[in-house]
Length: 152
Image (spheres, rainbow, N blue to C red):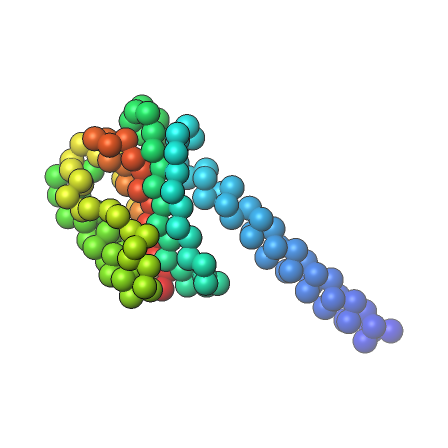
């Protein structure tokens, strides 16, 4: 009887873990879009087609104005000193796109980064800056949100 109970408990645990993993897959894209203001007028998305755990993703979203970013607590104004930090992420990301043979999908120029823009950087504290990161960069001049994600 005890042996049967252990098998049932193990099966229930496996089903629960599988359900939790699948719900994360379903919720993933919704959670991604919740990380920046709605209202973009056009988008261009290049998600890594071979991604499982490691991925390199590049997206662009066009907006009518910077209004949603000016008041969004998740985005900070790029400081004068922060320009180089943001540039470092995009230069590292370009190298990953080149290494993956996907440079034709990447058209970002670091020359657009200025201290009048907005940024949100999320990186894994267990790794160095360039091992696992997501950067949302809003260029106020072109009203374009650039998103880069590298988890290598």
